[in-house]
Structures are given as C-alpha cells and as structure tokens.
Amino acid sequence: AHLNVPSEVSTMPRAVRLSVENAMVRLLNVQDIDKIQIPDPATSKRRAQQVREMYDLFQLNVVKGTPSLTIDADMTSLTECRLETDRFFAQLVLVPKGCKLLLRSLGLLSQTQQADCLSHILRCLLPIGYQSETHKESTGIEMLVQLLVKLIYSINLLALVEVLKQFQASYSDGGTHLLICTKLGALALAALLRRGHDEYTKDESTQSAEDKDNLLKWAATCQELIVRCQGGIDPLFNAATQGAISALPASMIVDAEVMVDFLYELGANANQEQRSAICSELAKIASRKGDAQVQEQVAQLLQSLNWSA
Image 1 (spheres, one colour):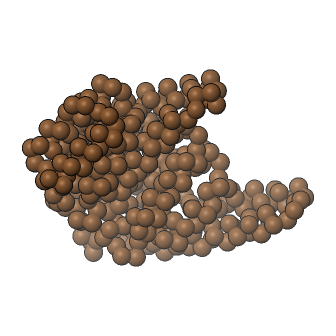
Image 2 (image 1 turned 180 degrees about the horizontal axis):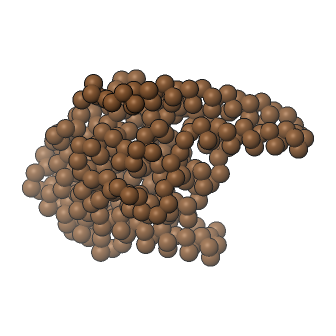
Image 3 (image 1 turned 120 degrees about the vertical axis):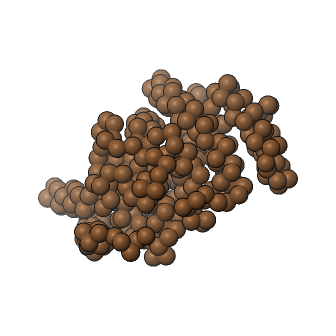
C-alpha cells in the first residue's frame, strides 16, 4: 500500500530529518550553555532562544477543543494521522533519531509543551503503531513506550486530565476499541491509567486540598474512558487470544500479557460498579472461549484486584 504514496508525502521524511538535525544542534548548544556555572543575562537569553527554536522545529500541532475529525475503526485511521497537520510530528517520532531527541529534550520543555507533545502522539497512536511495525527503519515500540511513559510522568495530574479529555474527543467508540486491540495503544493507555493509579496510592497526609481536587477531576474524566473501554473488552479478548485482526500486522496486535496489564490498570481506576461489570464480562468471555492458560490469567487478574463476579 505504501508504494502509492503521493509525491508531497515522499518529501516529508527529508524535511523531518533536516528538522531533527537542526533541533539536535540547538539541544547541544543548550547543553553547552548549561555547563557554565553562572551564565550572564545575555547567555540565559540565548539559551531560551535556542530552546524555543528547537521546539518550533518539532512542528507540533496544538488542537484546542474538539478536533474536526474523529478517529474511527477504519483503514484510514490505521494508516494515516486523521489531521493532516499532525503528520510531521508523527513522522519525527517515527525516526529513531527524532524519538531519541525528544527523550533527551523533554526536560527543557514547559508543562504545556510536554502536554501538547503527549496529546499529539496519542492522536496518532494508530498510524505510529502501524508504521513502527511495517517499516523496519522506524522507531521500535520499546522506545515509543519509553517516550510515552516519560511524558505521562513529566506533567502534573491536572494537565494530564486535559490530555485525557482531548484524547477522548479525538476517538470514536470504535476507534478506541481498535486502539486497545493494538499493543502500542493498550500499553499507552495502561501507562496513562497507571499514573492515575499511582496518585490514588499516595499517602493522603502528603496531599494538599488542590491535589485531592485534581484527583477528583481525574477520576471523573477517567470514568468516561472506562465506560468506553468496557464496550471493547470482547474484541480486546479476541485480539489477545487469537492474535488476528484483518488488516493489522500480527506483530501490532495486543498479546495476552499486555491485555492483562491494561485491564488491571482499568480496574484500578474504576469504581465498584464498573469493576463488577468488567469482572462479569471477563469471566463470561473467558469461560466461553479462552483456553486454559488464558482462563488462568483472567482468574489471577480478578484475584489480584479482589474482584468477585
């Protein structure tokens, strides 16, 4: 399919690589400036300028409010970024050197910039995952997950709530269900949910009133995601146990281990009622079509969360 790429797209990799090289130069300049013990005002100004120029080279697409196009469970959503303006940064992430550059430079970006990076990648998870598996020279899934986790843990919970809202506005129910059937999608959402889970397990005495308020906002936004994901448990189970979805490369499909991780984090963020529903659904599916090994995994998962059907 990728042989019929229109000519304007074929010039993009060159432009992306050039941006990566130029951004790397600026990152190294900043690192050199940071070796100066007490920089003078002019040097500090130059440093800020270099960081700004580096960030501009990423050509990030910032979407405020509801995106104009929804990501659905179709071939176009799988192979292309829904918004054309998202393509450049998605390609930059898919160049291993570009992904490494992002990992190295995240600490120089503001919370808002980091949140925008995360939102952008989440919107393009399907085509990024697809290209990562179908083009050998693309960034591998391990490094992509490393970047996602670093971003998820770099920003504060309130910013993450906004990212989650943006994510939910970008995908239809079908698009979300397709996403969790892919390894990268399930790992990304598991990492997002794990961050919330980590916040829940913090000692309450160390939390300010604002922290508690942000946690309530996270919980409310998360409920919507959980409801949406509940509708995709059946296809998720099929994908993980049969390893086949038409049009998807086998290596891109979620496996049983990743599915269990994802469901564990989904349950950890769910309320009691949702847990019971997820649990009944899982028990039903496992008894209906899972082999002995999968049934054992599901039994352990339910036990680990002290869920009871």
